[in-house]
Length: 556
Image (cartoon, rainbow, N blue to C red; front, side, top):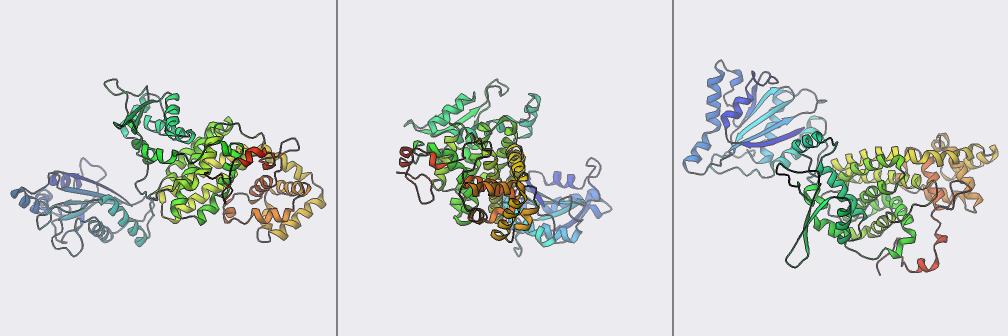
């Protein structure tokens, strides 16, 4: 159920609209289903509807008129709340709608249950799927009702109503979503021939600049380099107070640029929030040689981190996951850059919640993300397939993290991001996976049987599923390659399947292929260099980066 609340000055105007059946074609059989005392006159069931409507307006306005004589009546004394059921919901009875109306006015403070001085209200049903609650906000004691945050309290109560009546449970937010473009902005963008509004284009540009920048000075330099107009506000001391951005081709009627502050683009794009994320904790030099390894490790470990970390640390790692997705369209092959940009845009909503992030918990991965924007990707043909497969599992873990905390909109955003990521992964994996698959198909029957026996022994609960998947030949080839490289395949398999999130994978065998090849430093083809081989890191560079307990570079 969805509530929409607004206020007005005319009780008569609202009641006239609610009972109108001529101008409003969707209004059928308007009638009261509930009221403040259960005895309000019902114009919809009267022989003289106009006369009864005037009586109803007079009854609703009684305390408003009394307060006006004392000069205490608010100018906007009309409270209007519409409550609509989902299309898939059953048709509710008048009695059920009456109960819902009473619960809403109680929850919002309009007419608390058991309060004899509560505001006067009526619930009008003029269509099968929704009601309108009309109230005047002056109480019987002539005080103005205290109904602050009425939208949130109504929404919270409607969530309980959905469960009580077995209705469709609406995906709800927590007021951390980026502001949606207005209708005027959308129409203006359409007239200019753009699919997205300036607000949305600027939001993407600013988010990408934050991901790439190492500090606030570089952040503003990157923004200026994209052609975006930047206006930096400063305190008298010279310190940055905030910023505004605009597009050169987006002007108002006077021909002036239309400016947006960072917070108007998204809550986490205000300057204080950006400054918090860009506060340096160490230089890039310490981790530069292993930046791609750190990013992949950070993504691969995120499901376990979300299971074990507290909420503040978990939110920080999800924020860095969003930054990773923001960075990839800048460096990924063009063939699937569009899907990655769509995944990043979808996951943007999942990057924020009411939980305040403790950003220092994820700084090592954040530094690595900024570093990979500045250096070429590894030459291993399977690199992006490995990274995107790990990202898929990480996004699924973020979805689970949000869902268990009732972050409904964020969980839904993560689900949508996974859909785009899956398309990018499939595009990235088709060629390298085909090469490995063909080698698996060409394995001798005895070798295939030996690898199958190994899987049954190491993974008895998953073996039958793995052996019937299309990706099994590639896994068999990978196990054979690992054994040839001197590894114990059983040990590798056990380590690779310890994580719970493996069950969310579309293909367990494919996940195991990439995990095994990465952990054993196996090339995609005999001609590829080993992927992520730490042994190739020069000793001097390795010694210059002190390692923390989790293997990430720590601050000196």
